[in-house]
Each structure stands twice: as structure tokens, then as C-alpha cells.
Image 1 (tube, chains in turn red, green):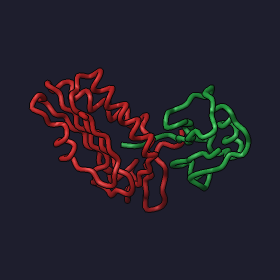
Image 2 (cartoon, rainbow over the protein chains, first blue to last red):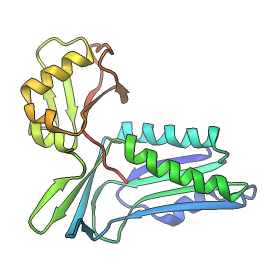
Image 3 (cartoon, each protein chain N blue to C red):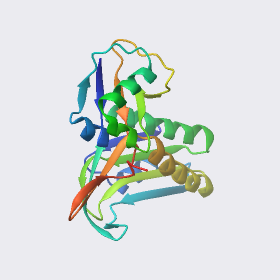
Length: 138
Length: 77
């Protein structure tokens, strides 16, 4: 298999990079998503990620396969966390390896943009004075 | 028929799984049932239904034994 999709409590950049690196690929692009410490001026204490894991993995695999079949990427890793995360912690890592850099950059952008639209994972933000499911309401 | 709920939909229903006793044969019918039972679902930015881990359209049929889930607006990443 030349694609890796995982959802687990903790992920590292290194495991994604290790998976995609290959002698035939001269470029590896990596996107790292971390917990931001504020939203619209309010301090974020922590995030909680809930996943419909089997469907989320299936949607992540669709993204990875599209990238391989249509975007010139040989090896791709998409990793996402579940559970509680504190500001600064890593919540998503995407690594794409290609013979040349352009495809790798494009693939990372496509993967994170599509993940945010289609993968059934939900983020709850915890503030000092309450909590909210992100983007649930118009 | 069992229906899984996630994120804010789970909070609105007050449970991660609900039982639907009314016979519904289409996604559209299930959606109307859910909106009737939990009117706050209508206030969400979107409310998709997944059948067997794939996004379903309102015209899609529901079969006994399908794994059905309510997918409120996703916010991963």
C-alpha cells in the first residue's frame, strides 16, 4: 500500500514523513494542523474531536486515492487525531511525496481543503465560559 | 431501525444512537421524521444522512440492516 490513513489519539509528523519518503520522490510536502489558542478573540482552553471513524477513514481514503490517481502523487499519508487536544498540539498531518515539488504542494492543499468539507469529524471548542461545536450553525 | 448521531446532532438528540420505530423507506422520509422529533436539527448549517458509511441523497432507499448516521456540519482538521 502506498497510502496511509489513520485516526488515533496521537499523531506525529515524523510517522507521516517516514511513510511517504521514497527514492523515486524528490519532493515531500507536509501540512500540519495544530490547535490554535484563540477563536475570534476568545481564548481556547482545549478542543475535543469526535469521529465517525469507519466512515471518516473511508472518506480519507477517497481523498488519498484521488490524489494518487489524478494529481501525480506516489505516496500519501493523512493522519487525524480523536479525543481531547490542547493548544499547540498536532491534530492533522498530511504528507505527500512526488517526483517533483509542485504536485506535492497542490496535493496537500487539496487534501486538507477536502478533509474539512467531507470527512465526518467534529470539533468542539472549549472556552472559559462555555463550549461550542465548530461551524454547526449558519 | 437504528440511527447513529454525532457531534451537535448527538447533543440535540441526547443520545449517540436512537431507535426509529416508524417505517421509513427513503432518506427523505427519515429526514422528515428526524426534523419532527428533533426540530433543532433544522437550525444546523447542514444535516446529511449517511447510509453504510457513504453520504446519501434524499431519494436513496433505506433497507433493513443499513447502518444509518446523521452527519451534522463537519469540522475536522
